[in-house]
Amino acid sequence: MKNSALSGADKNWMSKLKKAIGHYTSGGITRRSFIKGMFFSGTATAVMAASKTSVKKDTVMKFLQNHYTDMTAEQKESVFGRIRREIKRDYDADVTVDDPKPIPGVKFVYCLNLSLCNGNRKCVEACVKENNLSRDPQMQYIKVLELDTNTLNLEKSNRYYEGESVPNDGKFYLPVQCMQCDNPPCVKVCPVQATWKESDGIVVVDYDWCIGCRYCQVACPYEARHFNFATPTVPKEEINPNQSYLSNRIRPRGVMEKCTFCLHRTRKGQYPACLEACPTGARKFGNILDPESEVYKILKTKTVLVLKEELNTVPSFFYYFD
Image 1: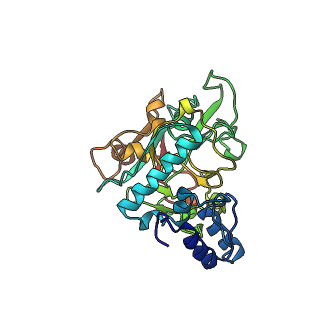
Image 2 (image 1 turned 90 degrees about the horizontal axis):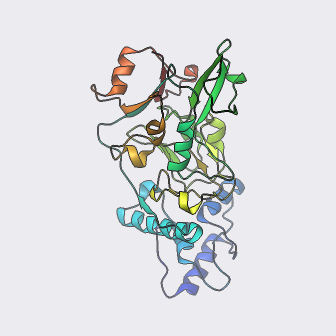
Image 3 (image 1 turned 90 degrees about the vertical axis):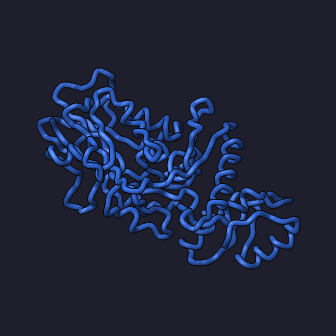
């Protein structure tokens, strides 16, 4: 169905829609819930969010919204307006929502120098703030694993180590986040095509299309997909107002979310927030197609490693040592 605004004949229009989709309730059900219901039950059980007395325009717009890749520029701007209004309503914050496109001739990769990482977790803090991640319940896209230098066993790593006096004696640190795989298993299992890989190498999610089935979370071998169990809690004064539809906008409850290499920044010539926050210079980011880029030179001159290479996910996130 095409994106649409309501006319004055709401009741007649709503009656026709009710008949078309089978069942109507006055509960707070979204278009995503409708698709989810069809997927899990195999039946088109009707689902429209409205008050008992009138249809809410923004909710109906969300219900009828096309997939991101099918929307025109005008339809996207209408959706961005709806998102701005929702954030204003729910968080009393004024934000912008844009849609930066992949840059032609750019393929982003990340390189991380394990000789320099000391486990300080400044990258985690910066990511939470930049990407409007929920504080309660807590969500973090980056996890830093503390490993014993004698064993280097990922299964026995500690991701909840305490103290600011890092690095700890006899310990080694391994930050892990979305690998933006070139062969992403998460994309393959999505039953509604809510996630895909873009031309600059970033795997994105249409958060208005995701049904929260969590198949991608199970498929990801890096634990890089995170399910939003509750409405995100972000203090008004800490909201990053510069938001992007496929990136750091405040996500709704019930969807999967993930790192996007801060595409709202990197597609505009900036570095990811985690890189800028790193006090040791361990993080490097850039265009692998540019022979003059730092990441190109690292991959050409260093011995680089990827996590779980045997799975053939072909990560765009590389580790190396001095």
